[in-house]
Length: 433
Ligand SMILES: *Cc1c(COP(=O)(O)O)cnc(C)c1O
Image 1 (cartoon, rainbow, N blue to C red):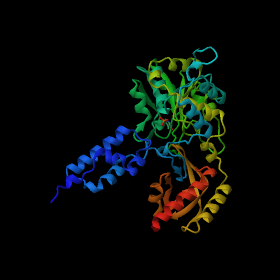
Image 2: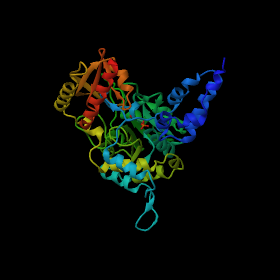
Image 3: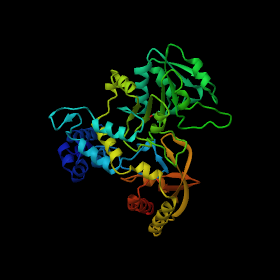
Image 4: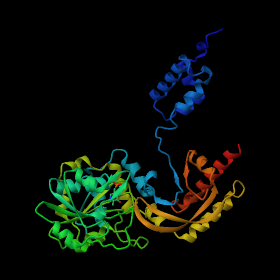
């Protein structure tokens, strides 16, 4: 009997195999070679049959250099944290592509010398936030609050209402964040009620500021009372508010969601917020408010450790100055229009799968406006399609409701309806085969 190891192909032969070469385009040649070498080692160790070598190599190679795929968000959650929160506008995507090379992020083209970093992104924000004298950008909402707490309250105390001791998600708790930078929390009030007098009584010489946190992902109802920023601003210490969502001005669909401009006008010294929730931009954290306070924060050594990169600055500026970003377009969707799209998609699928247009209730997501449900429309499909739709090269992620798969249209730009139809066709045909 011949030794089966004699059937093991040589490394260069495997590398030259047309299917392997196809699968390797766009990948690091060293990575491809390493994959082949390790599969062939498996063959020699008797763990892989030599005739399966090519198949094993193909299975082991990454599909592309980046594993992040373009997903169609059919969940009905507009800002879906697991799907990367806000989708960038076309203007922002184009800006990111340009900034990805060498760019004038910190360079003045007229003088040919160093310029202020990201000056235009900052200016664009200032133009949009009524009531802000200055803004500073960091990597996310959590970094914004951490930097403010560190720069203003390390070794001092921060007063916060018990009803605003919020956990945002994945174990991230606002009070723990504030304490982690060396500030002491003074809790006031009860779970359901707090009064201005509670805050006033807690103020002493160690107080750095009063922190108000928007309880963005839950509501307390019944016998409750909170103290507004208007009232808090009468206290002899600064007020800082974490508004979370990044809404810059009031929005008619979200009457209970605080916005940065209104909170500053109500008297807050500083506001912190995320850039990738209702602002509709890239992941970043905004610190906006009074000039002196923003300067204190900006000059703290940790500010450098939280500095935003050029891609973020490019995307944010274009989000603010370009056409409306997809998150806001989704939020303002006309339910009649969504219904018409659902019917038309169902008609386009009639020959491949049993689909039905259904009314749906969409949500804002991203931990914002937890009680708001937005009238939407969806295409209902057999639940068995869910997994197949996620397995496509351009995956579609919907939600299961009453044993059916709903593809909610609210967060899908209408220009993607053709792609959605093509995806469902592809997934349905894979059922028959
Ligand atoms: C989302 C949120 C945060 C955290 O912001 P990230 O950008 O996720 O770091 C903090 N506070 C509130 C109130 C939030 O809603």
